[in-house]
Image (cartoon, rainbow, N blue to C red):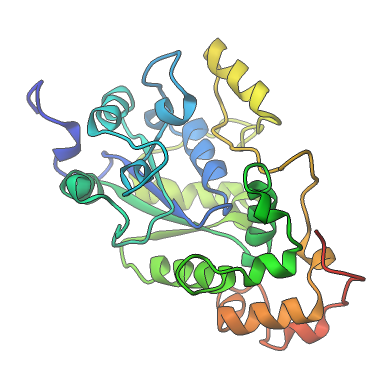
Length: 290
């Protein structure tokens, strides 16, 4: 590669190249990226000490989406590609990258062609509880109870539940995708690392503890950035100091039935439930949590 050529256009070689980490929001994206950075030397590094950690430890290619609130440029991504041997590229987009702006599609496609693809997924009920709490930090409309949040229009006529299910199904149908189950990363980290290492073609360092300690606040995260000791790319998910919500404590019977109907059996397909009749086995809470 010549000095003036973008590293995005290098050829794909097993054991090299960027790592695409795709997911629906609040599905363990940052936990997985932090695991990669902790256990694989090639995934570590930073593109400048005093640069936002969310621009220097990895790169979100969603910043190339049309109308993104903080649009990115290829030069910013190239900086990360040059600083880190195998950088993580984060996305919540669809596999077809339909939301990428026209002027960036060729660049993004070149990145994808030489990347190893992972898709992180999680129990959708927990995903949407976490997403509601996260959105409460900046979106007043997210303060509605969880039942209303589940049924809210995703923006294209689909409920949030249907949008989650469609996202997961679409990504898991892609042959080159290596699926990563959030719960398995926590419960069986060593086995998951072996799978990841095989897909990447490089050996992990087996640093103990295997999972990094997450930062507990944005202040702690920014202090880590300034001192150059970043271990976590985590984005805190609690809005306005609210504690996380457990779906079993929040969903009413009707919420459970709605989730099963809208997701069309995906919880059973993924092994989170044994039967589509699971809503009838859940003890209904006193009210849907807000």
